[in-house]
Image 1 (cartoon, rainbow, N blue to C red):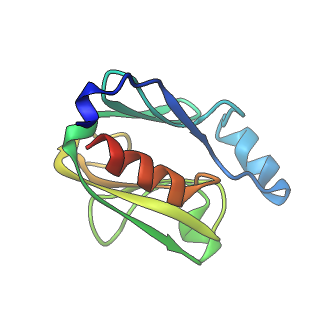
Image 2: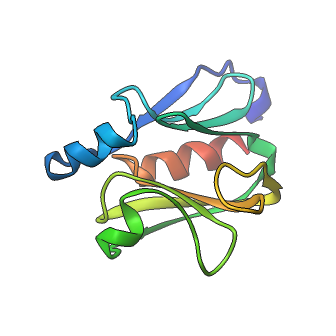
Length: 133
């Protein structure tokens, strides 16, 4: 069983694009920001001063998505369609992580039901989450 395996933290950095360097600086994004799956079963996503933390048991499903319009995928923003949040560094591809129960709001008026992250390896993050659920 997966619970019997000794787990280590797994870190998934964002895929950064040079053309957005000024925006990254303005948003205080650090090279160390990204998504970490901790050994104790927690998902931690950081984007500059913003952070989403939730137990992996709260993940309902994931979906790799992309190409998106750059102005909806780069930066930190809430969705106008639902209560999702974006931690985006590129518009090519990323991973949507849907939650069973909403996570505390980072921006906007409501708690978030999903998080989209543009990590360098969205497929790898999806697999790692599935392996730990």
